[in-house]
Length: 346
Length: 281
Image 1 (tube, rainbow over the protein chains, first blue to last red):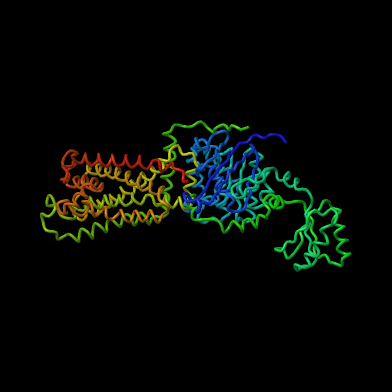
Image 2: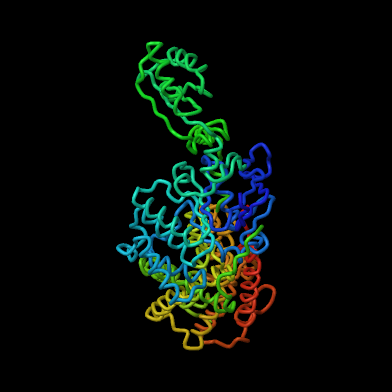
């Protein structure tokens, strides 16, 4: 594979919250390293609490790491934060909007904070208002905006100074479909225009649809990295989900499992209790499906549903971590200290 | 391999950039005030109520009680002006703290501000302007109540004094907004500092009225250093060198008072400056 130049380099970042007492400290980043190729749309995928936001906040000079280095476009972000701030656009997870200002006034303020000349700023604002479909409401006060409108305004603010690198933290969480589509389309256009985009997400389909590179982060570490297609192809095989009845029980599922386990071309059979005792199989090739049907018919078992698919990012995730993204989120939900994180994030 | 990005546009002069940032942040504060005028209305009404009620409370104070034999209402005006400006400046950190808690401050912190001092300058400009409006209302009302008027040169002295005091206290309050954990703690500090500093100053009573220990406190209190030059201006005395306060440790002129306030402003600004650049670990 060709060697791509990286525009963002995070080297061995460590960060723990909750400070001095080792017992109460939460490790957010554990030697996290990441290289984002110039011009790519890079997805940072991981469950809530994996350390995505912490990594992005360190990158954007909001937070100091305990150790490690951060370079953006060759500039050391810890030594020269202001130079890095000029290069970056940052769209935070919590939408930062002043309810009293109109959208246009917020963008004007943003322009002054980035030292844009008024004429250039106004031209750029008109472009972005058009691009993000904000014409109808940009002169209304932000307090009256829906979540999707706020997100779009926030994105416009991040893009106002035409940064070469745009960093977005969970840009579409909780958004309506229209706003999500608008944001996705802008991100794709940015990549076409040569902007490097780094976005974090815990939505598999978002990263799958947008990213040309991705890193899977869990517990503050990168555990897999590459292009989505390459990662999926590396897994090999097809996925089959099988239900003999709409609602099976454990005994029957186990009986089917042992029946199919030794079939030629079947690599793996797992009983998925969470999905009504359906069976998840990994098969070598298409022909195996016909063979499965014959086998079941011979044993006098019905087939309620049988679905075949190529490996998905969720399978990549499962392979890398040993659990699905949803399970990881549930496990992590109990182990965070939101109060300490909130304090550290301010 | 590393890509080196060209830095977007050549940097303008520091002064131009800092003015642009400061004016933009100041404009935001004034737009907020314009659309939420309750702050202004309450801010003008409250000192007038102070003036009327306190003036009435001590209206029957024995003649000759106060230095120069002036009426209590005449004595009180300077105290109310300074206390009003002081309270506004002490509260300057609150909007910033809410910006911090709502994430809006991050917008400022990820932006390449030439200097985060712009945040302080914007608040100082805003609160000084607001304090002047309040002071004019107080002075106008005081004049109507027959408590006198400081005159042209006196007004200039009022302006300079308030600017120095507001700068010092605003810097402190903004520093606290960066340093304290949240708005509850900041409100607690404001609450504890506000009224005691009023009572331990010469705003409501002269030094001669106080027990020795309180007199010492009042003579060291920055509010006193702002009150006495304004009080002298009210008495028609705008000379910078004339003695305005007989402190237990010596005589103070208006120039000394203003000098102390200027040192305090510079000192507090330098003290809190590192807090603005601190990355919250």
